[in-house]
Length: 113
Length: 111
Image (cartoon, rainbow over all chains, first blue to last red; front, side, top):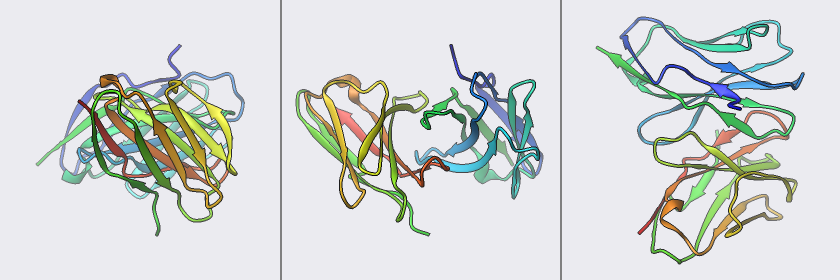
């Protein structure tokens, strides 16, 4: 079964607007971590934000925030005040007890001027 | 801040040849992970090392092997290369089970 599901293959967002990228996950572990990574067209994988399963507060890192709803098993990424440089592929990933990351299929974000 | 270093960045090989990819983790990171990302795909876990010992193994072909050395750098050895091995290979490092930071990747093309 797919551990991470990203249902939005691609999204367009206007510059300076906010965009929400969906991510749902499936695990039976009590302790796990959820991550978002950004992959620009150049190929590198850039860490954006992390949410632990026991964290009660939603994680925030600058313009990135993670809307964590544990009961619904969702960990959506919100990018506020989008910039042209935000155009990239975004991957949601989960770390379970075995520590390796399982990735979703990714969402391509295109920011329009 | 120092990042993960991977070499080479690009590699072109013929079928049945061998390739060695190198990874230098962030200083003081003791864990290395290798991932393979095919064209248009998400990264897939290959293998990991913690304190120079193999800690986990994923969908890594028997033709591939890897190790972590005393200075914590890691090498992924790939033999009898096939066309389907063409991919972006990432190394990521972490301090124990903490956040994995990825290197820039090695883009391998098998002709």
